[in-house]
Amino acid sequence: MAHYQRIGNVPYKRHTQHRTPDGGLYYEELMGQEGFSSDSSLLYHRGLPSAISAARSWDLGDSLATTPNHPLLPRHLKLHDLFVDDTWRGVDAVTGRRLVLGNGDVRISYVVADTPSPFYRNGIGDECVFVEGGGARVETVFGAFDVASGDYLVVPRATTHRWIPTGEEPLRAYCIEANSHIAPPKRYLSTYGQLLEHAPYCERDLRLPQGPLLAEGVESDPAPPTEPTEVYIKHRGNGPSGIAGTIYTYPYHPLDVVGWDGCLYPYAFNVSDFEPITGRVHQPPPVHQVFEGNNFVICNFVPRKVDYHPLSIPVPYYHSNVDSDEIMFYVAGDYEARKGSGIGKGSVSVHPGGHAHGPQPGAYERSIGAQYFDELAVMVDTFRPLELGEAGRAVDDGKYAWSWVGGKDEQTLDGAG
Image 1 (tube, one colour):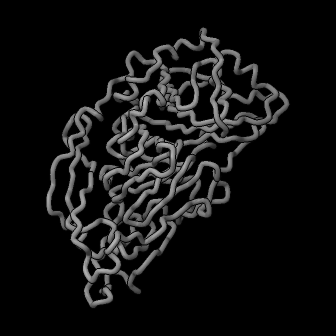
Image 2 (spheres, helix red, strand yellow; image 1 turned 90 degrees about the horizontal axis):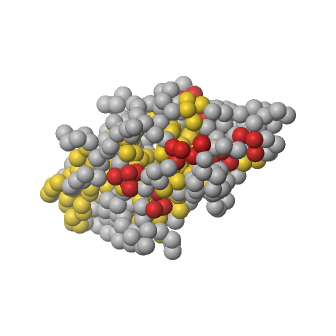
Image 3 (cartoon, rainbow, N blue to C red; image 1 turned 60 degrees about the horizontal axis):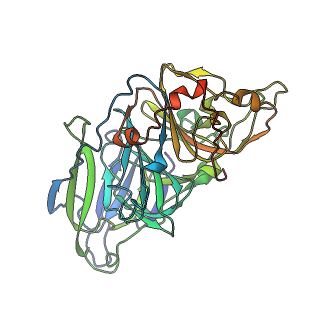
């Protein structure tokens, strides 16, 4: 997101002396993408950002293991069955994630949490976390966010942060972890990175970190306080998943940045600020796109006016995903095309490449004459096949594949879009 920001205390010129009030030096850190050849930011720390006092393994066990979708089947995964009977109590939004689907490009996890997470950074790729319900304070080295239902939070690779659930309800988060960067679609952007007029959102819709965010005592002390802090890190490894974990202990609290500037930083975007693109006849899924990464895209289907040609059929036409797997997470509303399939709020449908799919029996006809769809869903399309994680295997309903030839049990999504 090449959109320059400056927050807090930074020097007049980069890579020059930046003095503390008592004459010491702040320590400049460049966080940059693609080896100094793409977007970056400069952060100014009270302590040495490279200083670690201990390290140990973070045992990820078999939590990232996957199983091929074979035989090839469309599937219905009921995510709300993953954390039941208060099993979310004592769970945090980082270590408590359960892998639903994954491949070498992207991993999709789900978590319900009520406990503050440890500090964490993903050294493999960017993360895009969609908040399904509840709320959280997210503290990052760039500043803080207050996120709630409907928010996307895009966190650049290697950003140290933690999730602190807030409010009476637990935090429900749908976590999309890339092995690449996540950004707005290139077709939405000018040559220099401005969101263009035809984009369904713009810079005004993005929420920036509130900061700088300094740990208690960091701002007032002449030197950073000695407060050893653990940071959990996902990074590249040689195991079956290609991912390993390490826990660093830093001698200083990581929230010691007095200022930063640049074009690389986390940001939040609420799905209600996405302006849907509609037409006389049914529009293809790319008009719903919100972000993209390497070999995958993220779309959202929001409440909207539907097709207004006098002979239109508002639900999607039947289609074969020749080059991609389509993963739909149903958040709220009444998803017309899936009526009769058993899919409800909190469901994920898996429509793999090679399988022709479309509306359930009767939905095609019922949609004729509709003027508005009240639905909210988040879709991830991948260009390499996804495999099932342990969470996906645990909540597969085992019968969705046959729903086009039977199963008239009408079930719609509850809640409002």
